[in-house]
Image: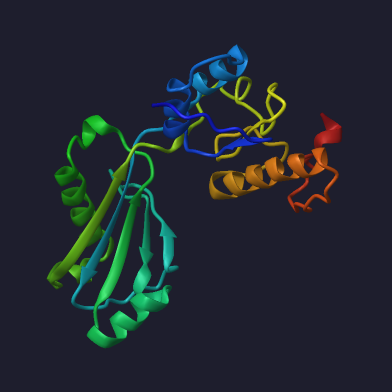
Length: 223
């Protein structure tokens, strides 16, 4: 049976998929404008992250996190055995390496299965790091989801702010319209802080200071 939850304020802080699901399950009196804003939120193309364990290390002159271009799938590579303590310890003990490949936004029709993703990741890794062709793959893990926030043209106008026309309903997430430049995790955290600050202000409590870049560019006066 549905249960009621009574509170002074409600901060909705889910990803776009979760937020749509929550609002699809709501009932009773509601604000049509807020409901429509949530319905308008978009989800981006899927992403995939593949982490691979090998039995040997390799020479690498670039950054331990490097953005890439020109590949069908892979758009960045991270060497975890050089940046994270537990992987560093494992590499020192075994002589192996841990590599992660990212595809932040790919077309589903080009890679319809997870097997297609892994196969392409492996092929492109051997092009990126030829020395790993002779290495033994010890283990791999694939994360493949479709829950990134989408930002199609024209969506800014209807994107919800942290505060809503419902006085005690607030939003937080990387899909929230912000008063200063930010994105991804920074936007999710910052929107949560704005929501908390709004509640503090409403209750006469000192707000937390947020530091950000200037939202107005140095050349804006010339426009």
